[in-house]
Amino acid sequence: MKNTPAAKNLLSLTIILLFVFSACSKKGKDPLKKYGTFVSTVIKVDSGAFRGLHFGDKMETVLLKETTKASEADENYLYFEYKIDTMGSFDIAYDFDEEGLSEILSYVYIKDISKIDSVFNSFKTYFDDHYGSNETQMGYNVWTVKSQGRGDIHINLSDESANFTTDGAPGKLSISIYSDKN
Image 1 (tube, one colour):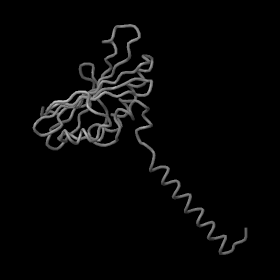
Image 2 (tube, rainbow, N blue to C red):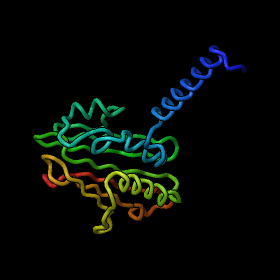
Image 3 (cartoon, rainbow, N blue to C red):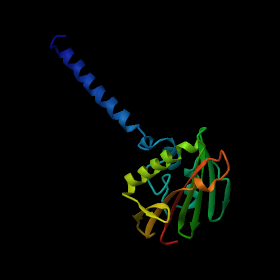
């Protein structure tokens, strides 16, 4: 191709399209995918305290952000159940006080018990990457995060699979998030 104005325009257009395509493909990637299906499905959104929610959010906000109807609800409590394809399931309980969302508890069930360590380590890596190194306290991996208005926020992760003694029972992880202000 000769160095003509048309060739230069075509080359410029090609370079611009490559930059646009590259930017769009990076922008659309879910940063949670690198932690695996369980983390990306349970955590859902890479912001807030959990699933894009913040301590102090009102019950209406939680109901709008969750993707299914609450299985249980009362004036200070919401409970949701979700499936993760054929790999397992999880549930989430949200507690509220006069200031809004005050505590979150999620149990993650992994059908293939041989994958429990891998899934546990994926959650641990996610929390380490976002909140720094954890401490081990009474069998829990614990992260402590400063917050405004709620004191320290604690994230506890534990493998509770040993509590299931029946053959064929799924693995079970526990994630609890609460503040000192409770």
